[in-house]
Length: 539
Ligand code: NOJ
Image 1 (cartoon, rainbow, N blue to C red):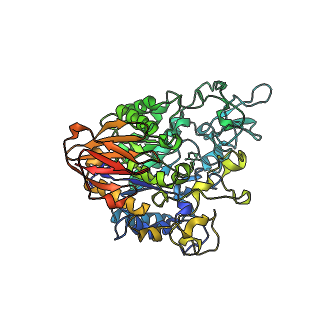
Image 2 (image 1 turned 120 degrees about the vertical axis):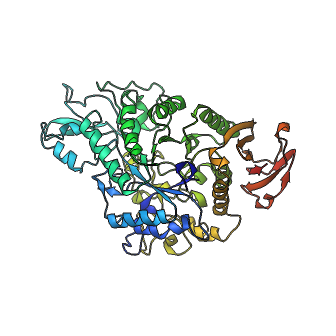
Image 3 (image 1 turned 60 degrees about the vertical axis):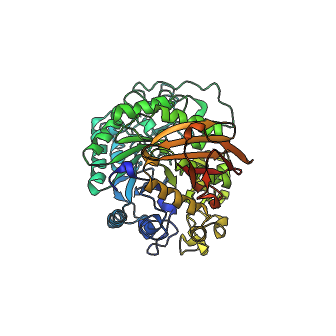
C-alpha cells in the first residue's frame, strides 16, 4: 500500500473488549489478544481485508474513564500489556500491511499524571500553569458556569491550595492549559515519541475543548433546554470550547506529523449548531488538509431516511476541499450500535452506503457482524457517565461489550467465566465464526465491499456525484477511471428505480446489501430493489 490515501478503511478496536489473551486471562482485552486476531483483519484466507486499525487508549491510566484519563503518555498500561507487546503488535500489523493508529488525549490528563501531582503541590509549582487553576468567586462558588460533559460543574475545588481547577470531563481528568507553550511542547514530544516508533496515525480526542475563552466568560443559558435532556446542554458551549486559538494548537500536532512521511491525524470534532460542517471544514483546511481530517459522525444522529442521508452527504462532499478527505464514521464507543439504532436490515444497507462513499470509512469493532447493544444491569454498570447521569440512556457500556468471536463460552473473548462487561446474550446466534461460514452474512458483505475498495480505487478517490433523491431512494455515482452507481432503497417497500438516461452504459451488480443472488445481474434502464436493499452497479 503506497500511502494513507489508499487505505480502504479503518477499524476502531476498543482494546478492553476485543480479545483477552490466555496469558493474562483476566476478563479484559489486551494487546496480545489483538495480535492473535490480526489475521481476522487482514492477511489470511478468511480475513476481512481492512487496511488499518485504531486502538482506543492503551496508555497508563487509573481507568476512571477507561483510558481517556492518561497518567503516562509514553507507557502502556499493564492491563493491556507491555511496551514489548506494543512493539510486537506494531511489527505484526505492519507485516500484514495493517496501519496502526493510536488514540491521543490532548485536552486533559489523569489527575494521577505526574504533571498534575506536581501542580497540586503549591500555587507556585512550575507545573501549576500546565492546568487551569482559578480563585473562587467572592461567594466561594466556581469561577464560571461551565459544565462537565459527565454532569455537574466543570470546576473542582482543590482544598490544599484553595483554588478550583477546570475539568471538562471527570474531576479525575483535569484540563491542560494549551496556552502554556510548555504544554504545547510536552504534547508535541509525546506525538514525536509514537510517530518515531512507527505508529502510522493518531486519533485526537475531544479537540473542541482544547481552546477555551481566555477570560473564562460564562456560557449563555440554553433557552431551549428542557428537563430530562442531558444536563450538559443546559448552557450553550460558546466560551468553554472552540476558542480562536484552537486551530493553532491543532497545527502544532499536524506539524509533528509532517516531520515524518505519510502520517495522519483524525480529530474527534462533532458538528453542532455552534460548529456546523462549514466551520469544521474551514478548520481542517486552515490547518493542513493533507495530514489532518475530522470524523464525520453525522450518521450517528440522523434519522434513517433517504432525504436525511442524502442531504448530509451532499452537503459534506460539496464543502470538502479537493486535498482533504472524508472519514465517515457510523458508530463508535460512545454511541448506540448501528444495528440497534437503526435495525439489522438497515445496518446491511448502511454498510453498502458507508463503504462506497469517498474517503476512508471508519468502522467500530463488531459493526461488521452487526453486533447489537448489550443489556447492562444496574449492578454491571461501568461507565462513569451512566453512574453520574443515570437512567437517561446516556451510558456507553451497551456499545462496549466483548467482541463475539464464536459460540464458545464467553463468545471466545476470554477463557475466564466472566468479563469486565457481560458478553451479549445473542452471541450464540451472532458471531464471527458463524458469519464466516455464510456467503450471505454481513461479514461476507463487508469483505466484498472492502475488496471492491481495494480493487477499485475510484471508490476511494473518485468523484462523488449525486444522481437522485426521493423519499425512498438515494442514488449516487462514483467516477474516475471507472464508474460505479450506488442505489439505496431506504423504504420497507420494493422500489423500481429508473437509472438516469444519460448514464448510457450497461451495468452489472457487483454488491447487494441483501440479495447476493443479484450479483452479476445485468442492468440497463431500471432496477428493482427489495425493501432496504442497496446495490452497487459497475458500468
Ligand atoms: C471522547 C471519547 O470518545 C470519550 O470516550 C471520552 O470519555 C471523552 N472524549 C473524554 O476523553
